[in-house]
Length: 241
Ligand code: IPE
Ligand code: IPE
Ligand code: MG
Image (cartoon, rainbow, N blue to C red):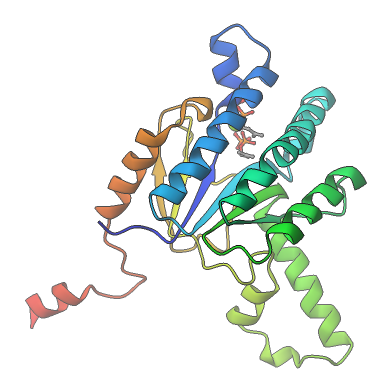
């Protein structure tokens, strides 16, 4: 089966999961962390080298303050509790997103996770936290503009490659597959540049219920897709000749 090298997931539906049970939204987020653990494990077993998880968007600050606090705390709990195990499993952890507005305790935890796991090569877990695709592109453009103004680069040398390298994902291959749970069918400002040619799979399950079988279902759908990248598939060319 054709396995994607990089899978990115929009983990959606925690609030609805809790609502369906008459519980507060935060219990859905808490349960969602268990699904995160399971997804990282499944990705390793299924031979997926890069897994990017959308944990907090640059627009999620619009939520009530107590929910924002819960989400920040859950990230801290996840890193504190799971970092040693991830390191043992030879997983490299990285974080993408704007770090400027994060509190210093979260920042130092994230840096610690990245530094500890820097040399790990079995698998990569990329956590998108305070991440927005437009923000990513804007920060990259600003960086290139600053370098150009300082005379470090020639503005006319700025091409797609240069912009890609200035993004948070500079040395990560583009996602092959983007999965979104909860039945919503939109990108919500996730990897908008990087997912230009990704395949999309939308699953009805809510994120806290996402398990190994759902992951396999998404991979099955991916394996049945024909990626053309704007070209004509080799076998179709042969048919017409
Ligand atoms: C996804 O679940 C988690 C985050 C966005 C942080 P939601 O909290 O968006 O759940 P719904 O969409 O309200 O059900
Ligand atoms: C996208 O989900 C962000 C994350 C999963 C972290 P949202 O629930 O915030 O997206 P919208 O608001 O429904 O588009
Ligand atoms: Mg949502």
